[in-house]
Amino acid sequence: MAAPLQRHNRLVTLTRQVLEERGFRGFVPFSLLATQRLPLDGGIYVVIRASDAAPTFLAASTAGWRKGVNPAVSMEQLAAKWIDEAEVLYIGKADSGTAAGHGLRGRLRQYARHGLGGTSHHGGRLIWQLQDAAALLVAWKPAPDPRGEENAMLAEFETLHYALPFANLRH
Image (cartoon, rainbow, N blue to C red; front, top):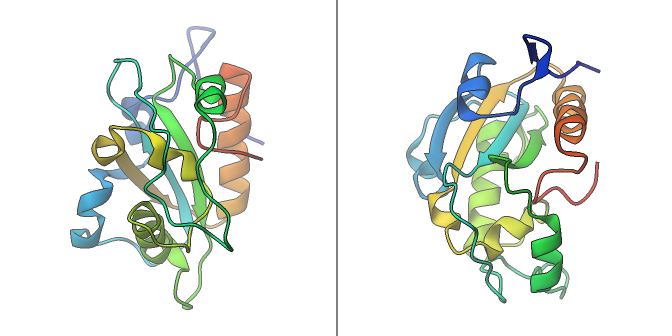
C-alpha cells in the first residue's frame, strides 16, 4: 500500500494539483464525459468538488433506483459523511476488459447515466444528492492494477481524513 505523499514531513491532501502531478487527466463535469476521448484501459477515477462553499444536500436523488431500492439516504447521513476540507468526494476503479461497462470509458459513462436515472453504477450514489453535482469534476488515470491503486488511494484518504471520501460507502 502506498504511503501518503509527504512534503516537508507533512501529509499532502488530495487536491486537483496533487492529482494532476500523479497523472490524473480530464477534470471535466459529468455532462461532458460523453464528448471526451476516455481510455478503454482499466484504471482509477475520482470525483472532486472545487468549491469551498458549504454543500447543499437534496432530499431526493437524481440517480436511478436499483432493484427497487431508493438510492437516497437521509440528510443526517449526508451531513455525517461530509468532510469540509476534502476536495475528493469519490474514488472508484474501472476494471479492464472489452465487455460493456469495463474500462474507464464504460465505467465513467455508466456513472454519468446513473445520475440521470440509470441503474448501472450504484457505487458513489451520494454524489447525486448534491445540489451542485453537475459542477463536480471527474478525472481518471489508467492503471495496470485498478483494484490495488483504488485501495491505496482510499487508504491514503483515510490516513488524511480518518474516514472514506463522502460518496465511498465501503472500502
